[in-house]
Length: 139
Image 1 (tube, rainbow, N blue to C red):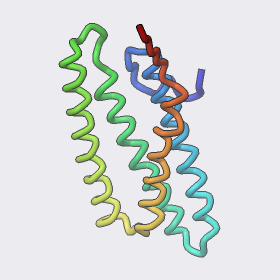
Image 2 (tube, rainbow, N blue to C red; image 1 turned 90 degrees about the vertical axis):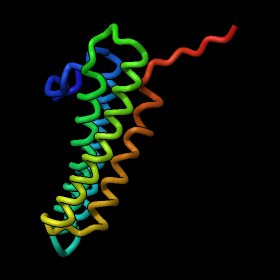
Image 3 (cartoon, rainbow, N blue to C red; image 1 turned 30 degrees about the horizontal axis):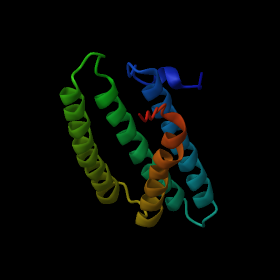
């Protein structure tokens, strides 16, 4: 069991929970690394900004996972697809809101904020190909 996994919502499907947990952990590691690198800069503003950029990514990932994977088993494919589309749309709006708050009210440096956010998006590419259990059958 991955430490801290109990803090995540119960997504209902073990592989989805496992993938989400790994994505969040990779995002957290990337955020910590970027923040640590920015601590080497003369100003703490870069480290603070990097932490916020990574935090934005982690928050929207948690939201999306809770929105999409909290549905009980037995939903139709149509309802599941609708849940994904709605979750993704709200995730985009939430990302815009969080970036707006960070830029307008938190006095951040844009470059560390955005670069750390972009780096944490790589967590999906790094984790999903090795986590999801997919079976391709050919006739």
